[in-house]
Length: 158
Image (cartoon, rainbow, N blue to C red):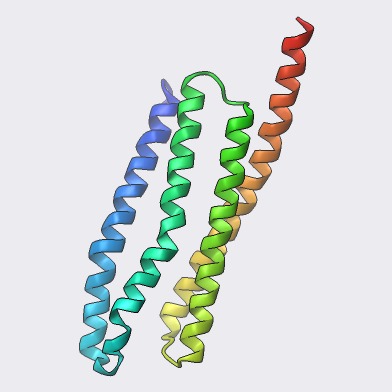
């Protein structure tokens, strides 16, 4: 894992995307179908629920694309670039979007009195993780932006 960090980063991005696709299009539909067997009165919420899950996960896939682009910049030995700072800022915004969508979902489930405690805790936990990713991406964006400015300044003095 030491030789080419950009390859490792891209491998992580691909693995995360594959896991996300499996979760979104295999696991969640299976779980939703199983829940219907237990709660047939919620049948009308099957497709809206799945579409909601897909909408919540969409910013995550866009964030993985931004991460992929950062990996490419690192491969070109351009780690501290304005492009990477912008990508990190976009990742921050995407993670906050996911957190907000999860919070709206928790509120909707509570209002509809459909919230199972385990599901609500899971959604809040993922929302908290999204906020953490957003905070880290924002901090990294600021550091990369400052490092890029210093690097540009140093390039001009040589």
